[in-house]
Image (cartoon, rainbow, N blue to C red):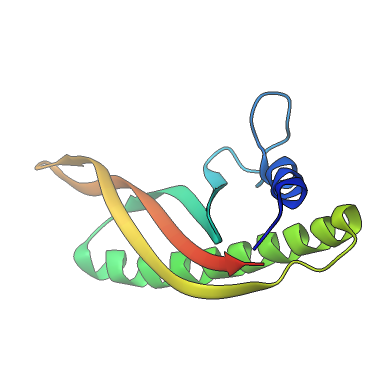
Length: 126
């Protein structure tokens, strides 16, 4: 379990609010985090354009691979910064991961749909 000082360090590393740089350098992608007790959730979200059902499945696989890579890179960076600031390694263990596709716009006259692709990965931290 993290102590109060370590929670503050982790919060400062992950904070992307006013005056902080974006976690991902893209206007259509975002990584946000939350900490509840010893559960650390990382949410990756991007806007995607979907076509036919066949395309949707193919694109979902591509976005799944991309999201897993970006979350792993993000966690590697968080652990590196945490070690530098806290003086000890942050131990993380992936508990679960899931992805969700939420359709934003759809039309009966066009097969193209806009959607949010989200991957939520939960880790235990100590």
